Image (cartoon, rainbow, N blue to C red; front, top):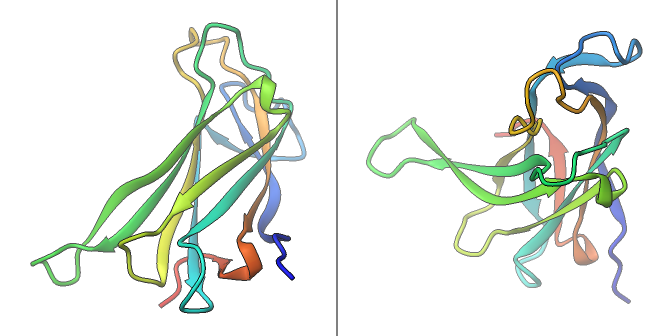
Length: 158
């Protein structure tokens, strides 16, 4: 039996946008927030993919603009530079009104060694004129992997 249940990585209330105080019950981060995550492979076989899901509240984007950028970065040792890591974009999506405050970002780890240290970054759409930026709340980050081939935890783990 295959399962694709979601696993919670982080839950809270982080306000993104250009008007501090709009959401009194949320921590204000400004125009971006980035969450570090460690993704571990639990079995040697199975798909090389997982899906990181971003849930929000009150996303309302304007037609004609791309929407808020959701990116997944991979941090890997830099070749020939011991103790240094390089950051590479693994996946990206745009979050818009049409997404109903839910964006799934498929991540492919093919060719990369586990454990995977990734970060999920949400950036407010700044192609909109300043003062009209969308204010919204980031409320949850979760992982969904077929049969829990990949599990994720908050923070970078050794």
